[in-house]
Amino acid sequence: MRVISQRYPDIRIEGENYLPQPIYRHIASFLSVFKLVLIGLIIVGKDPFAFFGMQAPSIWQWGQENKVYACMMVFFLSNMIENQCMSTGAFEITLNDVPVWSKLESGHLPSMQQLVQILDNEMKLNVHMESMPHHRS
Image (cartoon, rainbow, N blue to C red):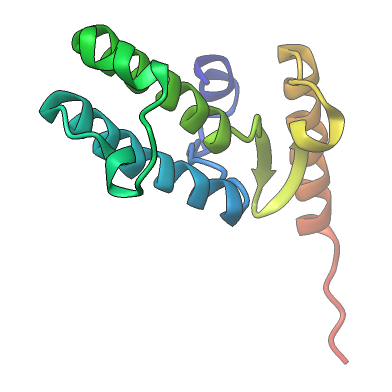
């Protein structure tokens, strides 16, 4: 960002999140709520399996005997899955609302040299387009 700002002082750089597909956002939201409910049940010691007339699995028994560790595991494992659902790996670059680079399409980030070359070419093209005479019909 610093290199680009020094080279092109007139360019405004904005960053924003690239939203994942709705199904992944919904899964992450569900996990976020489910995680809190599960941690609450572990802390209170309320057996949710009894509500369904089922016998509690051994992992639930272990969680009741090791509440702090169980809560930490639920929290961190859930966060890991939530983050995976919300991560797109996107690094998209647009100049004047025209896409000039897409990590989703190319599969990799541009090197600084590539980025500067892309911007140089786009800036030259923009200057050339602006200097062309406009014809009216």
